[in-house]
Image 1 (tube, rainbow, N blue to C red):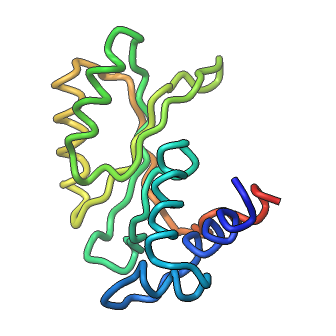
Image 2: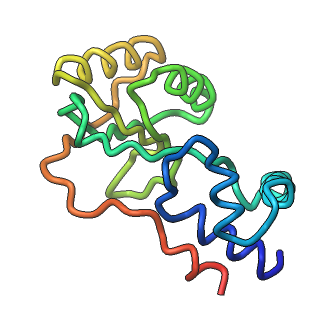
Length: 157
């Protein structure tokens, strides 16, 4: 990765102007041709540096008013099945697997969003029944304090 790739990463990690041709505008800002920009983005994707370029939805500004982190205690032999089921549910925005410890036995986490609290509860009931797992906890969001992407310059310099 060279200095041009670093500049590209910094630009795509910030707010991108909404326009008819995002990549053309971004290339112009970086003083590159659009073809060069797209080639470099494709290379970074193939190298695993970036996963995708996508808009960030501020869910607190939508009609989804209920948000809950679910923490599940999933046996090793059921993790793949649970992940498969969770990935199919549009209301789940992200899923993490973590190590357990003696004070916190949960190893799989999923962030749920719903227009009504019952929507979240129904998803949890569905997953619990589908995977036959009853050990979980639900942590409803009270207030969001900080939600930002990391400063990409910190990671590349």
